[in-house]
Image 1 (tube, rainbow, N blue to C red):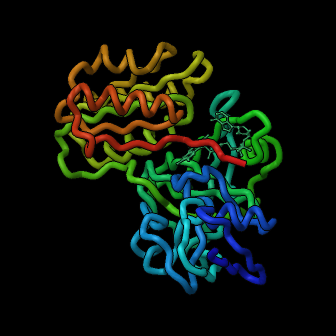
Image 2 (cartoon, protein in one colour):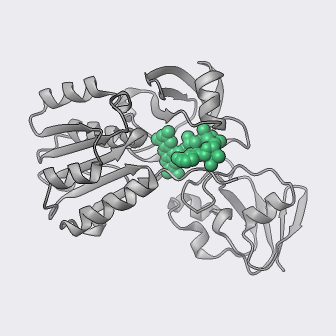
Image 3 (cartoon, rainbow, N blue to C red):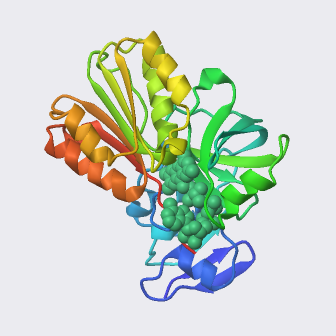
Length: 310
Ligand SMILES: Cc1cc2nc3c(=O)[nH]c(=O)nc-3n(C[C@H](O)[C@H](O)[C@H](O)COP(=O)(O)OP(=O)(O)OC[C@H]3O[C@@H](n4cnc5c(N)ncnc54)[C@H](O)[C@@H]3O)c2cc1C
């Protein structure tokens, strides 16, 4: 059975156990959320030993080169010595402002105190404390000067509860990332873009949209935002204002099933680039329907907002 050392702790893994589960089983505090290799909250660095390639899947090349990996999907065959991800992986930052975007969604603006490069629509991991970390998509553009996140209030939610009720401008936080490929690239500026998501799935879409518009995208851009009720359709005024300024941009807010609304308005997606974000079940459904309607899978970018697992 492989042994894992982390700081002053040493633990033996069970057969087939992930590094994260082994560390947590021994009471060693490690920040984590989705436990599925998706959110990046638990990243650690290997100092000695060999990790499977799959434990570095989706990480930036510079992180891979430093030995950073995802312990939640790492099942090593030999012993490992681990350390925190280290300099360059996390950036110090402060909450700059908090404003309600709807009764259940708060806009969190963050001022990094160290360089933090990102593409609008990617996601970062926000650390409120060394062990409370959650991933959030980036709604802002680097030129906005502040990183903006849209956080939905989750019942009994540790991070969203803190942001809604306790966090104050000036509070220190840490940022890790960014990760993900939900961002605009200028490749073909005439390509039609389809952006669809529910709830705070709007955050990355808003980033991608503003990035595309400010980059001079010429093709049609259709944004669909779904919510259970009208109160959930936040940022409606800003999006309507953008659609009146940019004739190639169409904004469709809806409280009907979003997959049906998208299919009715965009029955053929051949040649489209699509961005789909938010609730994991809706993301899966939309991806499938957009693919079956003609879009190439490589042109469908998505982020499923997987919840944290205890
Ligand atoms: C790549 C990625 C991007 C994300 N981007 C965003 C974003 O831009 N905006 C945003 O608001 N969230 C986003 N999330 C989700 C976010 O990371 C947190 O999971 C969410 O904010 C809840 O955290 P919390 O600490 O408030 O609640 P927790 O303390 O994690 O959860 C409290 C309780 O609620 C349950 N729970 C949490 N979420 C759900 C859910 N969706 N459905 C059902 N039960 C749930 C938990 O299992 C737990 O029992 C993203 C997630 C990922 C993986």
